[in-house]
Image 1 (cartoon, one colour):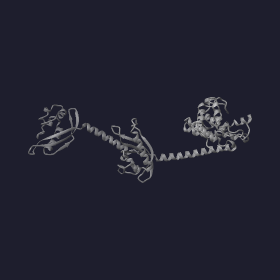
Image 2 (cartoon, rainbow, N blue to C red; image 1 turned 120 degrees about the horizontal axis):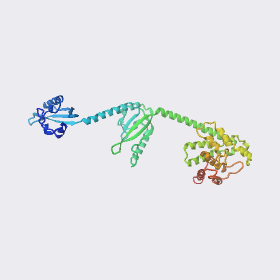
Image 3 (cartoon, one colour; image 1 turned 30 degrees about the horizontal axis):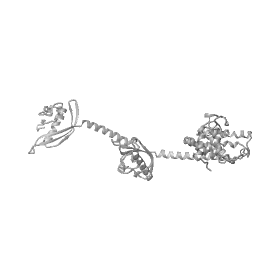
Image 4 (cartoon, helix red, strand yellow; image 1 turned 60 degrees about the vertical axis):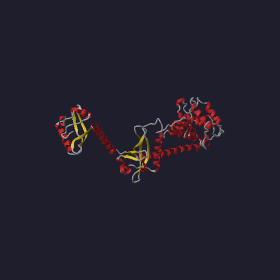
Length: 436
């Protein structure tokens, strides 16, 4: 513009905003294009510039049907003698930028609102495991944010816990070398963090890589939640369960001991049957829960012999048919003894069925095929094998070969084929032996 604020030069961008051509703007002033109110504001700015000031402003102007916000800078122009002869102005359309800034401001306000009110500790680490961001909730640990920024996580971890974090970090770096890595994977650990006063709290910490546009890790996002109360309660509950478990196994051992006291010739029989039955179950890939309760059932499978007269149990000659009928009652008696116990597993039923055969030739009910529980089928095979290779009052031990031969004769008839095969393989191929 010249000293009278008339346009003497405009570029094509200006002409486009004005909706006309460059030569139709030159020689004219702002009153020719803007309402009087806006033109007066521009004239006031121009006057200051023509007096030697540099003016920066953010005017909002309506050009045609558009409302545009500008960032403008105006500077005076001097001739060779230093006299001001006009001004030069640069105006940049910042409308969209301002909209983005407003969105960013609102987004930041929401983020601040969340981080200031959430009780979980949200933090960012660089790849040297130093804090680059912490939510205000870190004050729950007694720290101010500035006390931890730029500090290694080692400050709030005991040596053992810090080593575990390092191990996880190294594992994650190794995973990054894989082509088919999961970019959204999260690692979770339960660890103790140190408060500023050196007291400790249990935290559940979730960690995830932050990535750049090339998907390369550039930092770590973490969320830590105080689980001290629930963790301590869980540990107490676990301890309680362990105590109950000890009582249960102690009771089982005591009941098993009662039978062995009355029948010294079969001392250790239930324990050895339990060892073999569990070994078979493990080879069948049964769940740990099933194996655990099968061990209890096997340890108690002859508890019903408490009601069998001691002279029959210790008889040095073969039993008469009448005596054998008395012996055959022990699975049902065992069932009746164990049934009142509130086991969370079908232990009484397994004990009841442990002499049943798939062809219906077993006792006390004569069940067939799939009507017999899998656990009872395993126990039946283990019971027969252990009994045949052990000494009895009325006979010497028959030996492993005869015991395996006997169950293989009944394979698929009296005994489950898979159970027989696994039992045979345990002794022949895997060197299974009973403990002393």
